[in-house]
Length: 53
Image (cartoon, rainbow, N blue to C red; front, side, top):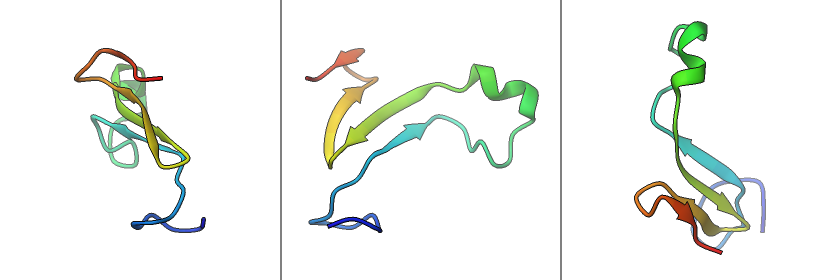
């Protein structure tokens, strides 16, 4: 149920608008969250601008 991101498995993660592994550390505070997924469900979607639950 857990351990990798693939169909049928639970997942907790967020999608950011920048690759935080390659940007200048000073730019980290300008990084926006585009989507947050908890237990495989989208709980925040920036296109909606609000929590979905």
